[in-house]
Image (tube, rainbow, N blue to C red; front, side, top):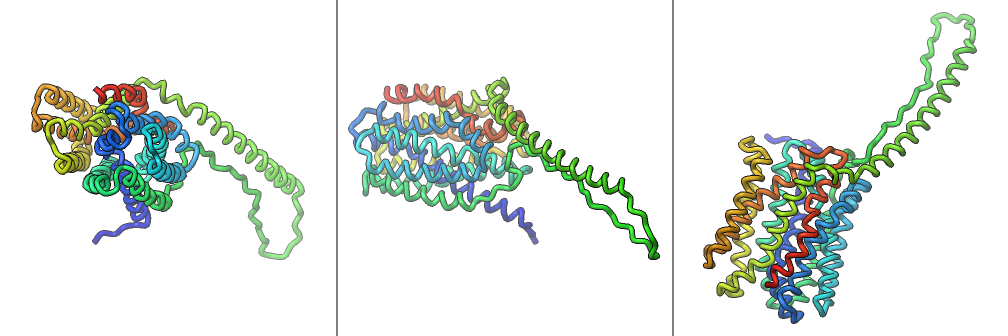
Length: 413
């Protein structure tokens, strides 16, 4: 019979909360292919202008990584996550009143993008506090929630767009996001989550053991012992004062060195690979519906393409992590093979001109990206010191921000 300790139950609750928060907040941006197409007619703009808010969302999320990482290091990650969920809901709610693409760009691209980063970039760090031995499995399960929510939300948003138009869809989505605020408030962070350097206070006890003589007898009072006791008491206060000042100095030095991780060549290389993966991923999910319509796919049929992508993505995220967990491949070898698979799939994508070939290549790209998403978050724990892990994880796709400004012109062609 399975027996769960109180710590196991708390970790399970934390996993469920992370699963729900990450699933809702990551699943909605994946609907950008549907929202992008709806924006063209709703705001009477071309493809380049319509795609910019949805591209900017991911750029804002990744570009704000260093700031979010610093906030996670400086404050409790729970405060950061709750603030992010609330900002997401307010920003999407504001889109309901928007009448031009510029307002959507500010609210969705910047407001929702920054809140999206606050609420999700620190989740791998939170999971590491609860699951040190099964980090791959917990990360894979949490990240698979994006696919699950995307699978459910795809037909849901299709109905919303037909029934309430784009503005009404924004209103209902903001209400859905509001549920993540309450979930994030229930999140518990263990005491070890405080990544600031700590110095345990040192105290010198001045208590003495009293030896009572067996017989009543006259005893001499040792004046020197009393003086020594007084000296120890004053010395204790002096030591505690020195330790307090030392703690402040160490914390200041830790904050000053917080961003030194960006000078690490290995981290820069990892950040480059993660940013390239994010660039491919965000471009694909934005244009997949538009490309399928070019091949004659109807509005009623396009939702099945999105649901198929969600299923394949979920399978990849929940299964591919077992390869590295079982020791069949190292994380670096696995990541290299996934990038090779993405490259071959993209070559196949541009070489073939049929709908079936296009969908097959897109499905394979999605499958390999699922593997990179799982390994990409965990591999940093092998190459980054613990004191820098908060900023390192939050900034792992930082270079995607400058890369992303080429996406809107590329999509608009």
